[in-house]
Length: 93
Image 1 (cartoon, helix red, strand yellow):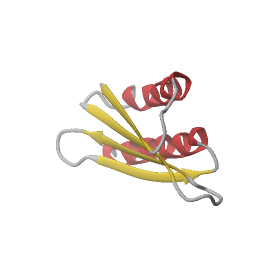
Image 2 (spheres, rainbow, N blue to C red):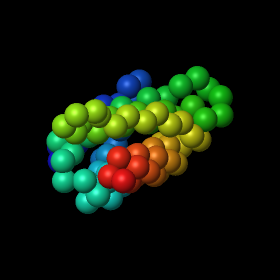
Image 3 (cartoon, one colour):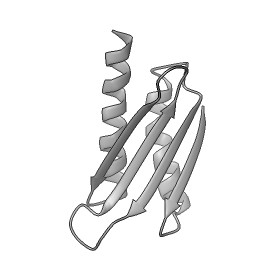
Image 4 (cartoon, rainbow, N blue to C red):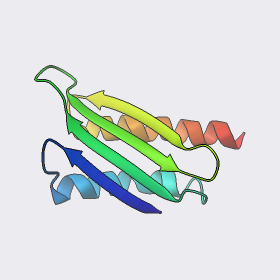
């Protein structure tokens, strides 16, 4: 699976990018049909829950897409990956 990480309004460090890749490995193991994962990270306004994470999994047929926000990028990524795992399980059943 090809993973494309885009950060808007800031430069994502290697530590954050490797964290995202590590979490997406869980999703990759669930479905062999995933072609690409497009991850967009962006900072919102200076309020609570201002770290946004959008993930689109490109698969044959309908893509899986989720948007999450939290107090940190790590929390937003974990929440997004958990939701994607639920979507994949639901589509397999």
